[in-house]
Length: 309
Ligand SMILES: *[C@@H]1O[C@H](CO)[C@@H](O)[C@H](O)[C@H]1NC(C)=O
Ligand SMILES: *[C@@H]1O[C@H](CO)[C@@H](O)[C@H](O)[C@H]1NC(C)=O
Ligand SMILES: *[C@@H]1O[C@H](CO)[C@@H](O)[C@H](O)[C@H]1NC(C)=O
Image 1 (cartoon, rainbow, N blue to C red):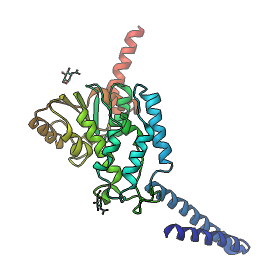
Image 2: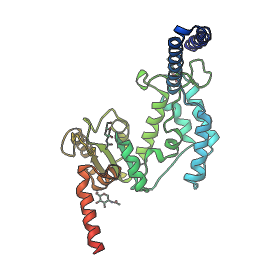
Image 3: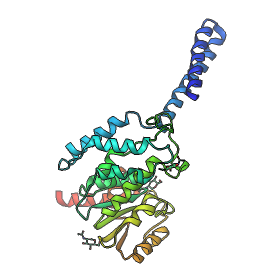
């Protein structure tokens, strides 16, 4: 109905443009209003498209799957078409707010993945920094490096109530339902990822926010629960703050203390580092003139002058 209404409105707008263009005095105002109307409709269109299933989702998902097994990780062999079939089955046969993690079991069964130890990287509210960290230390492995993470990263999807395929017009908000199709997929993917984790694992947390360790986050609610103290040697926590601060939480202040207590009570070995030097340097690379980066820059300068003498 909203689609119909907006179509009608744009017809009216175009008619308005044609009729008033002959009248001189009022025409400028009308054309401005009309253009404003059209711009508004384009914006609304984009907004709607963003909230619905990502356009071309099948091509994106199947394409990413082939990219992964052909270029990213050629040692693996998966049936990308079968993974898509299982995914579609899970999403479109339920109402859009009623896709449970169990609905994805078949899909996860056709995409098992194992990984050597000591490279698992977990993070919460540090996404940008995590990407540069993982790009520099290529051995780190995040959820987005798994096949499922790679395939579904940044995608939105939901079915329609009448079992008639994906809903490309609108999907419910995550918060609107208990069993959101996107949330359930990531929840199961996160759980599998954490269950697989072994050896030393790294957790990047954001010390510039309250509740750096948030029990409602994917890390706090799903991944932490699924880590196995028998498989994990050390949980190495790194708390990183923005160069500009604020410095709200640290290894000894705020919610991270709760995380450490939880880990300890479950029998994990752990370490916790505030402002890890490598993470500082990564941030300084993006903002070298920042005052927190001057000591680093000065010592480099100093070293340079020593070597050139
Ligand atoms: C949700 O799905 C379950 C089975 O997967 C079904 O029994 C239930 O009726 C569904 N609820 C709604 C509101 O569609
Ligand atoms: C910490 O969280 C804030 C707010 O979400 C974000 O702007 C900032 O980039 C994060 N800092 C780091 C180091 O990831
Ligand atoms: C695991 O972490 C502990 C504590 O940080 C460290 O002493 C040990 O060398 C690490 N082992 C590996 C294999 O990285």
